[in-house]
Length: 383
Ligand SMILES: [Zn+2]
Image 1: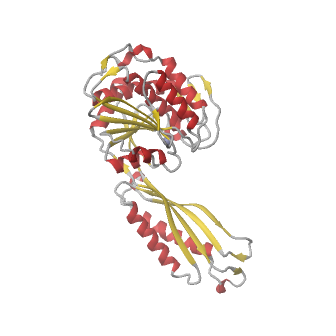
Image 2: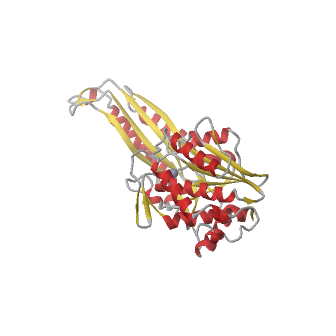
Image 3: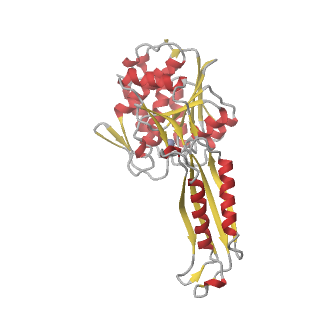
C-alpha cells in the first residue's frame, strides 16, 4: 500500500465512535437492518461505495485484481439487550465481543486501506444471520464473491489468531407410541426411554470415534433438549429430544449422520410398538487451516511488529461462518478480532479499547504484507 491521502483523516476517536455506535444499535438475528443502514452510511460518508444486497448484507469492494482478500464479519448478535456503557478502558454492551468489536475493527481498517493505493482487491462483507442459519454468508457464496484469502471477524484477542473451528450438527429424535398406565409398563413402549436409549448408543458410538486426547480433535454428543410426559404415573405417548454433535477436523458430517441413523434404527428395533424419526439440521463441516499459510504468516508478522509477541494460534470448539465459506470456496481462512472469546454469548460482554485499536493496526499490517507492499508507518495510525 502506498500513501495516497493523509491517513490521519481517520482518527482514533472516529474508530472508537464507530464501535460505540455499532454496539448501541441493538441487532439480534433477524433485526440487522438498522445496523446495516448505519454501516452503509458510514462507508459512504468516507467516500467508499457500498451496497446492501437482497438479504441485508452490506458489501463493499476496493482495489482490483489479485490477490483478493475478503474481510467478513457478522452484524447480528444473540438476543438479550445489554445497554452500552463505558467504564475506564472498557466498553460494555451486547455484541461488544461477538462480534461488533471485530466487525468495527474490520470496517476501520477497510476505511483506512481505501485511502491507499495497493495491488489487489479487498472486499468487506458485513453479514446477517451468523447466529442463525448463516443465510448471510450463504448469499455471499451464491453471489460468487470468492477470495484467495478470507478473514472472519470473530473474537480471538488482538494477539491471537483462530485457525480452526469444529463442525457441528443438530439431531432431532421424535418417538411415538400409544402410551398408557405406568403400573403396567410391559404393555407399552415408552418413547422417553426409547429416545434416551438411542441417545446413549449414538453418544457412545460417535464419541468412540475420537482418536486424540486433545479436545479439539474429539467428537462430542450432548443431549440438549427433551420433551415428553404428562403425569408421573403415565407412560407418555410421544417424546422428542435434540442432540448437539460436534465434529473434529477430518470428520465428514454425512458419514456421521449415517452412524446416527444406524444407531437410532438399532435402538428402535427393540421397541416394536413405537416409531422413531431422525431429522438433522444446522449441518456445519469442520475447518482447520494450515498453521503456516501465507495468511497466518502475515498475521504472525503483524502481531509481532505491533505487539512484540509471538501470536497464539487457537482452535475453537464452536463453529462460525468461516467453516461454511472456507469449505465451500477453498479460500485460505482465519478468524481474527479483538475481545476475549470467553465473553461470547454471555450476559456480560466488554471490549478493551486498546485491544480494539491494536487489532485495526494488525489487520492493516497483515493486509499490506499479503499485498506485498509495505504500508509504511502503521504505528502512527490511530494515535
Ligand atoms: Zn460470532
